[in-house]
Length: 265
Image 1 (cartoon, rainbow, N blue to C red):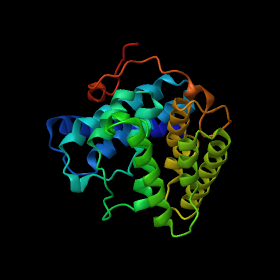
Image 2: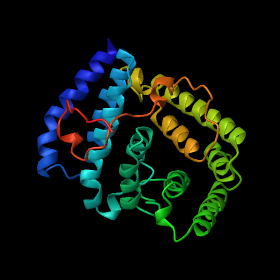
Image 3: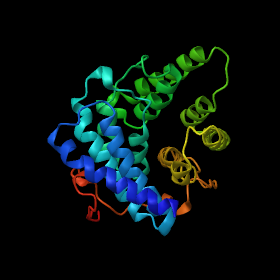
Image 4: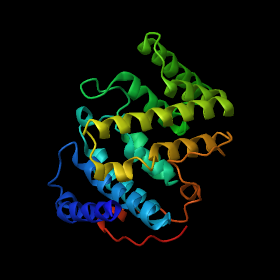
């Protein structure tokens, strides 16, 4: 029941905002994220209620394309790279050109008014590692990636962060290290979300679709697979059906229609 309500609420929000967003009258920094979140909510709720992945793949395309409609025009001070849900959408949906465009237009330094540096370093590492056109050559790229991890260790001041271990495992090509860190990050996410529900910071209605599906986890598995790492581990929040090859071709105008019908690759 809650998942059906989730679909209806997302559709209602999109019906109210799409025309104004297309007209350029919704220009606040949160508007592209809100539009993407509505598409994401609709796709995930349908995935969970119907048991088929196509609505999720389409929603990921709509979220990424809607976000990219605005991202190149955003002032640098409005960009917060660690607000990466749409990057996870693009990677999870295997829309690699869209993911590259998000990287190209993202802020390349932390926006300390809105994000912690460790959160920025996590996302920025996972951006520049997989889009080498941002580096002069492969060796420079790898050195740059290691420098980001070194800076992250400084920021942590001896603290523990499983995300750093995960990124280090990717850089070293360590499948077992990646698996262990992935599980730790997953467990930490679940714990945090359950605490939010208990403290009424996350509604039961939102928890119904946010808790069972981890879009970031799907993206991490896609990225690890690009590195040739073993990604056969089971993760309850990344249903096996979502790890199938996406049959749909990316369309930059997908966000303009709620019931968009994509063409196949």
